[in-house]
Image (cartoon, rainbow, N blue to C red; front, side):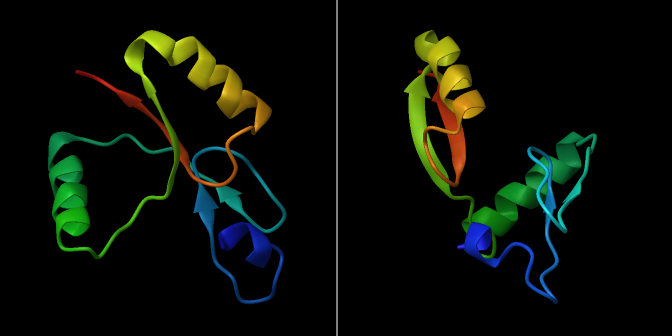
Length: 82
């Protein structure tokens, strides 16, 4: 798991969320082509995104609280849109 490796020499990591020792926080503006390339990587199983929890869209406020409080462990919190 990445969290257990943070701070070790030689690890290179970037995050768009939280900062941590030796982690660079980055911000990016993604366009449609970038998103399509990410989809292709996921479909080819070359990119995986750990999902810690999913919430229905109607519970988005609860998802934000869980994210802020770090309640769901490592991984992303996803909203389900039906």
